[in-house]
Length: 294
Image (cartoon, rainbow, N blue to C red; front, side, top):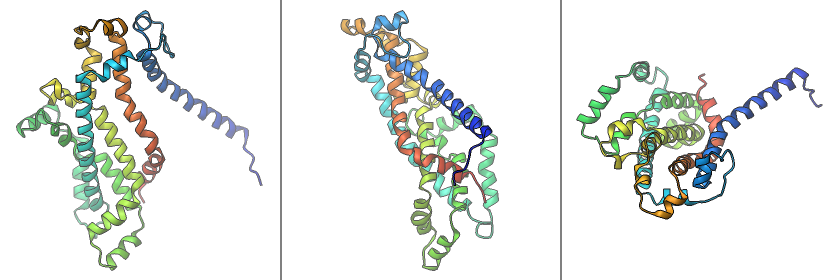
């Protein structure tokens, strides 16, 4: 028997789709415009003739960006940061979330430690103490200055421990009866069953490290050690002095400061845009299940 959809339900569905499609378009239009500018000629971009479609298509801006040593170096720093930062974040999240997911009869100090971590979210030390810690631990101007201050993402810990608490307890009890220890239970039962949550939190951590720019500005003394977003901030907010000082006549004729900035912004956003489709199938399940507590 086919269930009939009422008129009110149809209006609700149409309204939701209309709203979501409109929001999606609003999010995509700026990126499409940046992409169009990056592919347009210098004269078309300077004259304001580019909207959502490139005018006088050329790849000179991308050739300039990919041959720009500062841009390539900042991209390398960001890749290093993601490799180290995401690994540290997920390791700490798993190692903290597992014991905190236990009941009080198995871990009596669970509530104390849970509030200890939540307290760090409610009340922060501030920028000056954070800077002093990084400075006096001797990690200024190193990749660890971008990784260690945010080593424990408390929000991710809360989501993962709630996901762990929703896993069947019978699997853990059966493993203990067969002689398994906590390490075996964690790595052979909890982590494989928590793939959606872990993939989602990995995505959060990756996007967070990729988009972070302020810590690169304050913790890096040398601009050559800037991560990508810190470097893009200096290029977008200020004038691109390297471009203005270039001596290549052909480059000055085909590429402008505006088109080069647009190309750098788009290349900087492209890796994250390519990552989302691979983790999208884990995203909703990981968030919904991990945020519900029994």
